[in-house]
Each structure stands twice: as structure tokens, then as C-alpha cells.
Length: 116
Length: 115
Image (cartoon, each protein chain N blue to C red):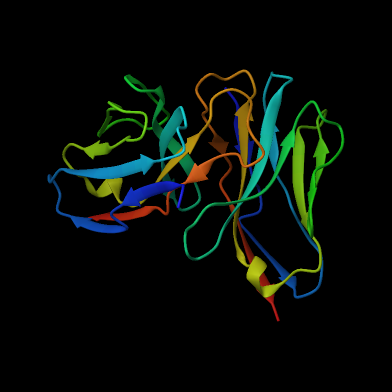
């Protein structure tokens, strides 16, 4: 069974600095998707970035980028020029590409604090 | 607006009571699922559906029932509420097949407290 692990329960960053959130996963599959979701205090789940495993190029979305290391099964999220609005809980998630169920597997979450 | 509508947003139940959490989507998504979020445990899958009339259990299905009579609706029923079911519940939906750029659409969540 696939698992996703986020080993950093809490992280903090100074406004305008860069922070990296870690995520590792375990799977025997070669084709899958990885996601980072942001959950602000409003509880809404917001997709930050997604990565397709067969694409070697790391995904980027404005200030958000990932370091996808397929062999190491690592998928970290880098937030550049951190803003106060980035403060939230961040979840890493996995989905098999061959799945016909649509099931997402989530990590435990990392709470990010942004200091002014 | 297109999306996932989840109700209620908050609910307090007494132990032993039953209730239904509603989830509806208007995007014609095939996949729908229910997750519960607990501190330090992320989101865990309760039940999921791949289409009308088809449901299956996820990681933590005990104490919950689901049905999917239409593509749009996927209600979650708590049969006899227990304090261990105190949690935040999310409904999510997506298209089948390869994941599209917008991924999954989540409801706004229900905070349930069982006393």
C-alpha cells in the first residue's frame, strides 16, 4: 500500500524568505501524481501544485516550486518570497495514475507560520 | 458557481444520534469521496464512489454509510454517533481517468462534534 509521510509537523519562515516543506512517499508504481494542498484557517483545500511522475521537469507555479526526486521518492515544496498569506497547513498527497478509484493518500500535514 | 456543496458547516451531535452529511457537485465528476481530518493524521479516506450506484470502503469506514443514487449526490451517514467521530469531514470530487490540471474539487468541510 502507498504511504505519504510529512516529517515536519510545524515550520516557520520570515516574511520574504524561502522555506522548503518535505514530503516522502512509498510506492511500487511508476506512474502516479503528487500534489501539494494548502489549507488556510478557512478550512478550504486549495491545490498549490501538482506533479506527474513521468514528467522529469519539476512543476512550478509562481512562487511555488517542487523538487521531485523520483528515485528517492521525495517531493518537497519550496515557497519563495514568503508572504503572510502563505501561513496555512500544507498537505502532500499521492494518487496512482492507474487507479480507477480516484483515491488520494495524504500525509500528516505541516503547519507553516510566516513571521512578519 | 460550479463546485462541491457540502452541508452543514458545523454540527454538534449527542452520542447515539444519527445524521447525514450532504455533498453535491455540479461538474459531472465520476469520482466522489469522503475524508475525515484529524490532528496529526492528515486526511483519511472513509468511503468513495466511482459512479452512480457504485461505492466502496476506504481506510476508516466503520460507523459510516454512503450511497450514490445520482452522479451529483454522495451523502455520508453516521448511523450512531460516537465521540471518536468528532472530526472535520471533507467531500471531494474529480473526473475519472488521468488527473486534469485542476485536480480535485473539495467541499468547504463540516466540523462535527459528538458529545
